[in-house]
Image 1 (cartoon, rainbow, N blue to C red):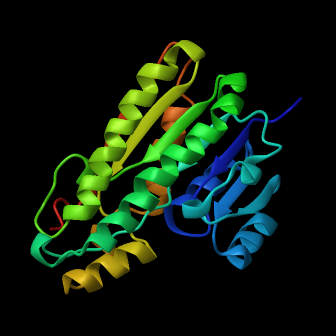
Image 2 (tube, rainbow, N blue to C red):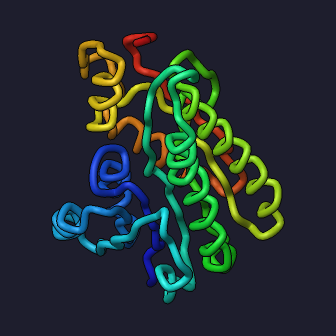
Length: 229
């Protein structure tokens, strides 16, 4: 029997890698990312996985050629650049939206025929910043609010085609990206106060393995330690 196929962006590290490990018992995997060496290492670790090295901001139809059936698409790639609105130049806004929104929309668009064929599932790993915007998070929060709107529209449009759409809203997660964020904020890095990537992966699994009568549209996961701002 054919195992379900999942494509995971941002799979070279952090949440994306954790999602890949969580899915490997049940899915064949396409590991998306820019770091081919890291993707190769992860693919060697996970049976049924192979690297899919692409630059999402430069995606073309040729990059998805041959993917004619896809059961699961997990968007976990993203970037964050912090700063006050008065100091945030246009190029930061453009780059943030290019990666966090436009690349997601284009990859999903290109893969919709494959997702429809499988009555597949799209999972978008968003952020708490997609639910509430805070000072110094302008471009990032705006991109995540846009991603939330994209998910809502995609769900409404593709429901008749049997495609499910879930948004995951994690709080702070112990990842390399979080280390960079804390450096930008000028604060201490406290991994014991953050979610583990595996905890976010479990939320993805909860949505993906829901019973057929249940469409899990949104999941919010916060660190048990409480607010970390």
